[in-house]
Length: 632
Ligand code: COA
Ligand code: AMP
Image 1: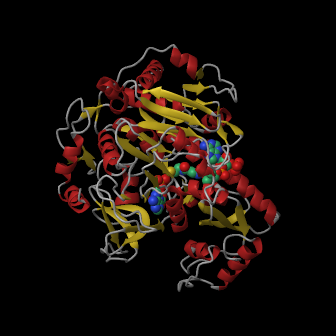
Image 2: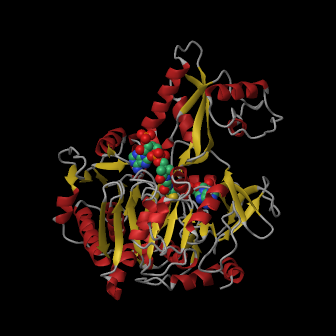
Image 3: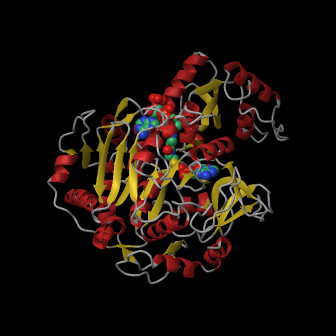
């Protein structure tokens, strides 16, 4: 197939293109229009269509005679356990959880928060919500109670589903006390929590509120799929924006199903019946789209992996899973491979396993640095496909579309725009930039199916965050350029968002938290380069006059504060006390310059800087504390 003509048609005739793709899923009622504009002025896909995403992912396959095919393989390196579930078995589990939720009053349009580790019940719970037309909001297990509370207050769930604990390497992390604390912090009242008791930790239950998941579900009558509109929300997934209030990304049912189904064939080039493994977490968008929904909608076997790429028990774990479950297409974040490379640079552990089932490896979630790409190419000997996307899109925006036409790889580029995404580079005034000119990476509207139609209960923030900067365009928040051959290079965020080990976090939020400490007069938090995690945040703080904290005490307090408020995943390890922050004459903190200094990059002293001497002071502090690359 020829990429150019296929892609062109998706941009020039979006309705014809996506209308054809929509024929590939089993609607209860076909859409009356392919693309329309709603009363808020936002584009909507497949208006009038009726369907159910859980039906597409499970029941449809059972009806088509795939009931005995393995749908989900739960491989827990953390607990050394593997369980396989056929499509029929998943249907039984999911129907019962749906019945349990229904008996607790959960109906179409209600919200349910899921705060769980990587246990298969997390996927079943998501599908059970979809079955009832309820909207799930999964919160990543690594988030602290404060973050969970913010999401509870925004999503206002009728029920929360959680578990007694998660496992991180050899550490058991009790989730229930975190949940209890979050419910205590939140204003929204919770009537019921379904708690999965895991053998490694027993959660104490609050009488009248907490219900034992296993017993209650087992005793529940199964519930059938409810009909929903294509434009009804399937889920809300919160992601970091530039402030302490995360953005509730809304995903609709119809566009999501059509786009994900399309992606399996044309991006991942996988076949129904094949085994697809995305090593991520259901708390992130990759987990939603490529651990749960896409592989199941498409009829693949998906792997639900609980564990880490290293030390579970060693850096050969991924290769072991690929061999054991005969993975055909594998997807993870580059940071996972950096961790493996660090411990097994010569890939000796890989030699123990037969990985010949593997057709390709996809990476996303952060920039794939060329050394990691090259290392992987050498050791894996299959195509390594970097693809760029966001929680907001729910699927790949730029990729080497393996099921269309395979292009030669250029290190540092995720290759070309995926069908439906009219990716353009704009300058500060909205002008289109030429080849190799770096600017704002934008997508000309309409966005293709599956992309967010709006933010949860916040049309205005949707407009101000994404649409208002350039009329007729969606602002991705990334900077980059397109070369003369149409390859897209994503160079990093242009806002206060960073990626730490594939986890999207807000330095703006961290600044708010650090700034809330009673001793801090002002502060800046920036993301600096980190060999393993890609980026990590550091803080520079100016103390109030007369503060008696020592620099070490201050750092310890602030590190603990971020850990308590956001979670250990923030990996905030340094808060450096400085006398002043570098600013422009109008008072804007020069965060980019701070980052450049810390990364040891050459930088130009901004002409608007208030006092250039501060840059030397910052450099000396970083060198003295051995933080970043400035001292090397
Ligand atoms: N629940 C509770 N705590 C969690 C957690 C979770 N789901 N995930 C991470 N944490 C904690 C860790 O235990 C650690 O705590 P500690 O500081 O007390 O030790 C902290 O958060 C930092 O975790 P992380 O950054 O993951 O570091 P790590 O050393 O534990 O592991 C990697 C490093 C690279 C192996 C790991 O980050 C990884 O596998 N990354 C891939 C991420 C990924 O798949 N992202 C999805 C995007 S596609
Ligand atoms: P998330 O919403 O968590 O998926 O994070 C989205 C952000 O991660 C993007 O806006 C990019 O900054 C970054 N990102 C994701 N994938 C890639 C990639 N392949 N290359 C470069 N950056 C990426």
